[in-house]
Every structure is written in structure tokens, then in C-alpha cells.
Image (cartoon, rainbow, N blue to C red; front, side, top):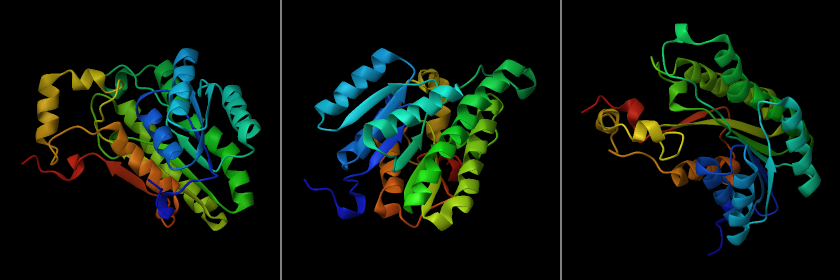
Amino acid sequence: MPVHSLFDLSGKVALLTGASRGMGYAMATALGQAGARVVISGLESGECLAAEAALRADGIEARAVVCDVGDRQQVSALFAAACQHYGRVDILVCNAGIGHPPGPLAAVSDADWEQVLRINLQSQLWLTSLAIPPMAARGEGAVILTASLSSVRGNKGIGLYGLSKAGVAQLARNLAVEWGPSNVRINAISPGVIRTRFAGPMLDDEAVMARRIAQTPLRRVGEVEEVAGMVLLLASPAGGFITGQNLIIDGGTTISDGN
């Protein structure tokens, strides 16, 4: 079935971090099925190679690069590798991130603070600083930063994670203002509870999930393909007049009164 022109990414090159499995892999699949060539990264070599092979088996032109986004030199090498493989990057998806031990903010160690902010926020600044100027020089580009539902709500268990993701949402707004005149669009997405390995501990807690589902109008958790669909929209001509937004993908949790 041909791709609708509003979602056609033929000839485009997409670079995605945190894309060797789960939500990031679903994003890479969606962009690839729309015609983009994709470069994916992850921490583990075996996962990266398996994801690359699976994408290629699906008819998608793909390359995998191992990268720890908390290491600035590796981030620079990742961007250089993408450009070496395909000549440029038209679409950037910063999806890699980490959580931290649950607890109140006062209990967060300096080491956790530094690591979570570096990986979840500063790495996205590093990569956007590399990718956006060439996009601007060409007069076109799309950047999607993965934030979180925790970026718009208070949370007494994962406050540091929420702080880092609120920073991601603000980064998208700031970059959208800076680079909009060059026709580069930058948006954040904020998934709620999505069926991933990352959300596994929450999904396995029946009491927690019963409360969450009761507070969610769609009465279910989200699937990775539903997040990927938003990324496809934002990366494609269909999202051509959307920039600087933090789009929430949560089944309605944030707007519900719990009834």
C-alpha cells in the first residue's frame, strides 16, 4: 500500500537514539516504513545488531551504532557515523533516557542528579546542537525529543526524572523559537504509561495499575506503535505547522477526574 504524501518520508534520513528496542524501535520502524533510511543507536551491541537485522528484514534501510548518550564523544561519533553512512540527518529523534531509584527529591544523591540530567537532558542538547545547524542550512528539518507525562505533573516518587523531562520539554520550546525561522521544527512528546520494559515494574504492580487505569479515560495502557504514530506525524509533512509543542500521549490521564 503506498504511503500517503502527507506522511511520505522517501529520501529522508532519520537518526534515533534509544532505538534498539521498545518504543524507540517502534519509532524507527514507523519512519522506515514511511520511506526514511534510519540510523538507530543503543547501549548494547547485540541488541543493536538484532534491531538492525529486523528492520532490514522489514524492508527498511537501516544502520545501527552503539552509543552511550551520556558520553559526549560517543554522541559526536554517532552523528558523524550517520552523516558518513547517508550524507546528512533530516529527522532527529532523541529517545534515550534513564530512570533513577524511587524516592523523594531530598534523597537524590549528587551522582544520580548528575547522571540523570546528563543522559536525559544534556545529551539531547549535545545532539541537537550537532544536527540542527546543518538542517537550518538546508532550510528544513524535524526534531522530536522524548519527554514524559512526568514533565507536566508532580510526582513524589520519580521527581528527578520528572525534572529532567520537564527540561526536555522546555528545550524543545527554546529550540523551536531559535530555529523556526530556518524551517526547523522541534517538538517534545510526553508518553504516559506505555507497554515497555522501562515501565515493567509499574505494569507488574496490580494495585498501582488499577489506580492508574481508573484515572485513564481509555482504561488501558498505551502501545509503542501509538507513540510511534505521533513521531511519524511530527517528522512528516503532515506535521509541518507544528513546532515547540509538548504533545501528551497518555490515554487522557491528565484530563481525567478519576470518574
